Length: 93
Image 1 (cartoon, one colour):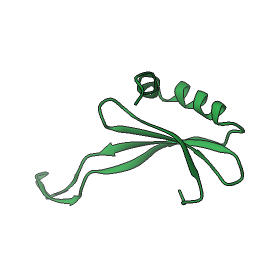
Image 2 (cartoon, one colour; image 1 turned 180 degrees about the horizontal axis):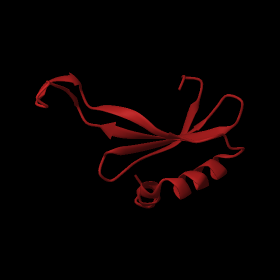
Image 3 (cartoon, helix red, strand yellow; image 1 turned 120 degrees about the vertical axis):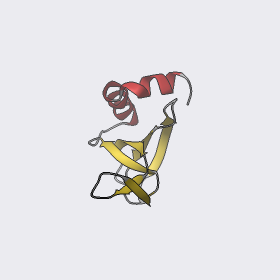
Image 4 (cartoon, helix red, strand yellow; image 1 turned 180 degrees about the vertical axis):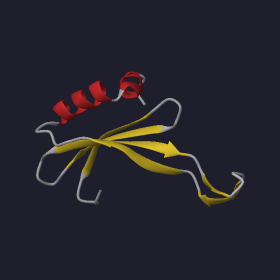
């Protein structure tokens, strides 16, 4: 997404493989996004053997919500939709 949004809240999963952000768009609507850390990508030869790394580990978007009228509604939906987030927010991550 572009830079025309404000981060309201963020959390990371206990295993370090998930990230979540609650954001506000300039028009006053809220949404959230989940990112998942993906492993390195290797070149595979015709025999199925892994070769050189062609892409390092990276954060990939795995969920982007719709728009909400309030940050509370967006947060509530995120907790209901992303099971790992409930524990991350409870633990203060």
